[in-house]
Image (cartoon, rainbow, N blue to C red; front, top):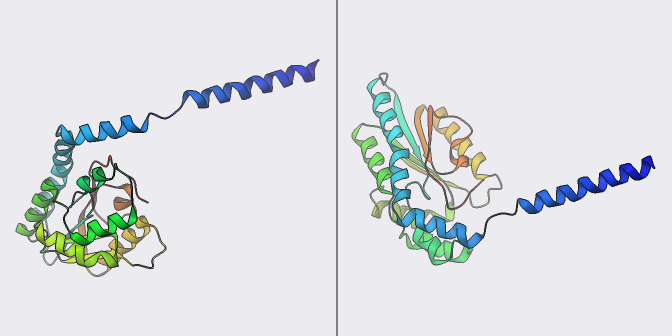
Length: 219
């Protein structure tokens, strides 16, 4: 009797777990895509971008005001969905990732600037702060990326670091190691700005500032 009782308890727990998993069914993909499109088209995304960049700009001003003699201050920027927007490309393919189409898009260098970040870039130059780009794009993407950055008002940067074509490390590891090299060379990274957590974690920057990232996630 006791054995049967425990069997019933186990069966009840299994059934309950199955019900809980079923109850946690994710939301409809089409609905989520529609919400993202609305987030962009209503201007909410643009508003959130401005709000996210504002603290970075304020900190840069405050940090420059107390710069020590001889300090080489730097801000680090990501590229995709930070300096440049790929929304039109993503929407053209229903937010799917097609490697050949993505490579062609990057090579054409047609992504528009994200205006608040371009303003931040320009403010950094006016204050004598260097700007370094660190991107998860591969070295093979350099020609199209450089063309795009120049066309969109980001041409006067101090350095542009790409992930090596053959690299096996994650984007997070690559970006952390690169910031470490920058600081070891005598620069002080006062602000690190990106839309992904992988852009920002790992240290080697006084402050990190995250932009909204509703479209995808990278590691």
